[in-house]
Image 1 (tube, one colour):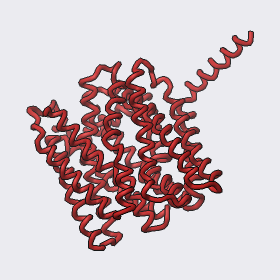
Image 2 (cartoon, rainbow, N blue to C red):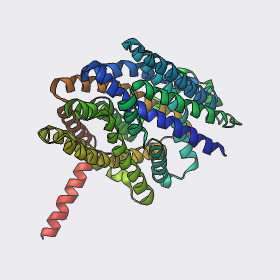
Image 3 (cartoon, one colour):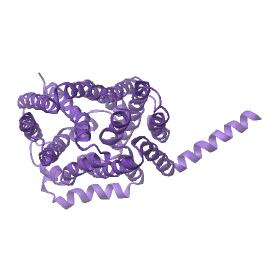
Image 4 (cartoon, rainbow, N blue to C red):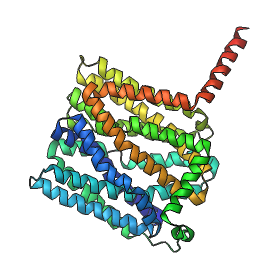
Length: 420
């Protein structure tokens, strides 16, 4: 097999494993703490160390062969999951063990992400023409989501029937298999042009990226918008969805994975749609797509509020429909934005730009989870979902007020001409 085939197989295995834990872990923590605020605090505490270490990890990763870093990360995740599985099997449910396990998993998952996902974004820019970036990013989105399609359902089913320890054991097996596949990938024959980057100091590496973001207004606008969106809506898996489906509607944990599966179906359909309609300039409609994305989440929140007197499965069916729609629109937002960054950011600083983007976004996410967890405990997960997404719509309208104004004026002018 070729190097690319090995990479795809190892990526599928690690992505499949990585998609199980974010769905099952919040269910286990919510069951343990019985509180959305404590659950949000748990994930904030466990995510922050990996986020704060991201800049140092980027510098460290650039000095070493990517295969070695990826293999080390996956093998360490396999060992951590094996140890935690044994502790859980022997009844060691100490909260401190769970915190340590979650922190270490987050750190090495981040290391794995930086050594593979970020470098793949740069590789796409080198191999794909700018006019086809959206198309091929859509195809990659399909492949990534197909690899994790059954993960949420499998994870919640195993968790509901066999318990959390069995889920962690499955993760350990998947990471071991991924490490074995990575071991067969040939080493790079050359350094890939990173000699100059390695000689730069830590401060120089990130000063260049920060200076570029600060001086390019279009890049800065999208950069800040992503930060705001991550703060308000990135806590769905950890807080909002479990708070609505499990805590409020008391749905079985064994079927909770259908939420992620529904979202993945939307993502896959969206990827196919983008790939088949590469001539559509989705970037021109990104402000409308942002607003539409948040409106769907607002509808989920309102459905939860007003359907509480109905059968829980009536609401759950509607929630699944909205999740498919949400997955579809989310990719119509994410793919054009990624393609925009790939086309506008110089190739020689793309790796550190995406690292900075990842670092900043991941720093905001735990804070958003903490805020959302406490707010959801006070006023409910669904009401919090509504408020957060209304705030997102306001932020998007503020960020794109010139474009929205031009579009509104053009609409009024067209109506006026038609009336004459």
